[in-house]
Length: 345
Ligand code: SAH
Image (cartoon, rainbow, N blue to C red; front, top):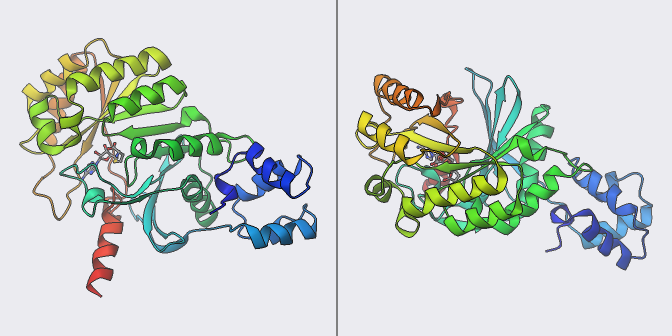
C-alpha cells in the first residue's frame, strides 16, 4: 500500500512529479499529513483536481481510539488504538515537568519472550509501518490537545527488530516540516540486539539509547530474557561501549527490580563492575506485576539499598516514578486485557 505518511518529502515529490505537479507541493502535502488531517479534502492549499486524484489513489489512515484511560493520580493517559487492519497497539502520554512524553509501540506484539513482560505473551503479530508510529504521536496530540515534546520507544515491541521502519519514523518525526521533534528528545529502548546496536551507532543519531539489562550476569539474564542466549553480556556491554564511542551519548540501562531474582546487594556490586568506565545511567524500574507472571516487585528497602550501592560506586541511578499505575499503563497490559476479553466474548 502506498502510504504517503511513511514517505519523506523527496519521495512524495517523486509521486507528485508522476502526476505532473511542481516540486513545492511535496512540502505542502507532507505538512498536512503530519498535522493529522484525515482526508486530502482538508489540504486547502492544493488544487481541487490534485486533491481528488490523491484521494482516489492514496489512503490516509488514522487509528481509532478503542480505549482511553486517564490516571486520576498523575494525569497519565493511555490509549489503545485500533489500526486499519484491526490490530491494536498502545500509546501512553506522560506529563513531566520538562514536557509531555509519549511512549509508543513499534510492533504489534513482540517475539523477544522476556519472562516478566505482557507485550510478548502472544508473540509477534507484525511490525508497525513508519506512519503507524507517526500516528501514535500525532493522534495522541490531536485527541488530548496536549503538545508532545519527547518520545520514548518503549511501548509494545522491540524497536531494533523493526529497524528500517523505526529509522524512517525517526527521520519523519524529526522533520522541520512535520512534528519537528528533536532527536535529543527521543529515547530508544532495546532488549539487546547486538548487531543492530552497532548498526544504529553507525548512524550517529543524537537519540538516547536505553538497554533493558535487568540482570548483572548471564545466569540471571538467561533466565528472564531469552535474547541473552544469542547476545550474552560479554557481547552486549562491549556493543554499548562502541555505541558510546561513536555517539558520545551516555547509555541508559533499565533495570526492573524483581524480588529474589536480581535485587540483592551482591547483584548491585556486579552491576557496578559491569558498567565500570562506561558513561551510563541506571534507571531502576519497580516491576509492574503481570497476571500471567510469577515475578513480584522488590521491596522498597531492597530498591533503596541497591540504589545506594550504585550511587556510592559512582553510577547515577534513579528509581523511575510509576506513572499511571492505576490504569494498566505498563507494556502491553491494556492490549493484553483487551485481546483476552475479545477472545472470551
Ligand atoms: N523491547 C524494548 C522496548 C519495550 S519495553 C526493550 O526491551 O527495551 C520497555 C521497558 O519496560 C523495557 O525495559 C522492558 O524490559 C520493561 N518492562 C517490560 N515489562 C515490565 C514489567 N512488567 N515491569 C517493569 N518493566 C517492564
